[in-house]
Image (cartoon, one colour):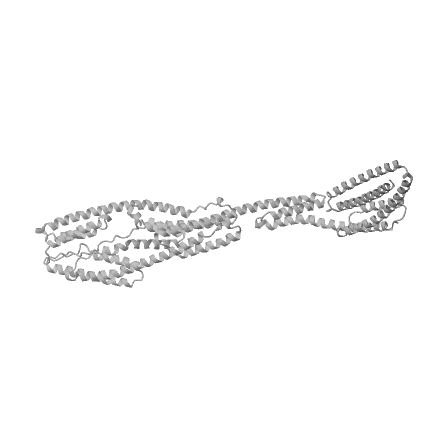
Length: 627
């Protein structure tokens, strides 16, 4: 493809309306019979716009086809050797690969939504695509050969026309023989017109040379009036027909079709010879006026299309801004992604509803919109893949917990197993979701394993409750026996019975938790009453015995002192013991029944030590009174 074809779309060359400046005159006229205004200049300004319109029309037509239809259309062009259809071929190729790109994107999205990794995706082989590429390659080869041949043909046509002009200049310059050379000159004009397009850069100059030599020839030519009038009349009728046809073009609703038809009329006008000089200007004005209307409609059409393209550009720019404003970096759930996906798809539908934007902006906007869509769906794919990996990791963790829970069935210690189950349940809650298709199954497996232990614990709890109720009855019987013991009997007989009943109490086992403290308080109250009664009586006996002993030694000062020192040592020892026990009390826990029982024992021991200290102090006070 040469540089001119790259720069602008191809179209039919627009040549001057007149063949040579309308310069066929009679022998009786010496005026120069030419038209100074070239009709080609009237349509040159809109030729490029028409080519652009064809491109847009082709794009719309081919975008509506399937891949097979696009391939078959290209095949027809290649087989028919229609090398002028290069714009259609380009549009076919673009439409095909746009369609192919959409198919691949849809296949990728479906592949990912099925749970697959994007990196594992590969497009299915497309035989239609291979056939189209082969046809396109054939067209390019033929097109290159065609362009080279066309350039050679145009160059050869230029040489032929230059040779004809050279011969015409020779005839026009031979004033003495100009009459006899008239038929040859006319034939040279026909030969010149019969040779079609030449190298575009030389076309205007070659026509100027042709017009100049024709003008010079007719300036020197004298032809009879009948021949001139006949020729003018025939040309007049032909041009009137063209004027009427040009006016009829106003009724066509399609401005493009009307403009193309007008181009054909201008080509015919250029091929018709001159008319009488007095009506020439008016005739040309009539034709130009009809042409102006068609050209104006054509121009208005492109201005309207330009306005529509501007509106489409603004609308598509807004869509680009909307899709770029979707901040998917904060999406944390499938629901957020699905909601945003619906919005993106809706924006894509709106995009298709708008037509083409301006030529310079359409591709830029399309690439911008497509990049925004691609970035979104790539991020979505990455999120789904990451989430899938997390779900699978969570599934592995929960499966491991199920295995641990099921393995605990081998433990004989139900309480220990149940405590482990509780820990496993806490770990289960800390683990996130798993794939939906296995969520119910893995949860059912875990709860089944857990329920086994809770059911077993419930069964054991019922048995334990029954045992605790039996223990409660035993302990109440023991308490009744303790309460029945005399508080004024022989200590040596009563105390062993108390110790025996207390041992039975300790061995009786647990009672219901809610009755434990109350029952133990009643038990201690009974025991304390027994011990207090016998301790007070024993203390009184000891004091009476000490007073008897004191009466025996009161006259011996040394014995009194020794006894006092002994009692002081015993008192200090008891105080030290009391302090030690009180310090140790801070290390005991009362959260368990065993701990609570031990605390009670320690409190009783402290009470007895304090009573002993008080008794010792009373004895020391008696000894001090004797001094």
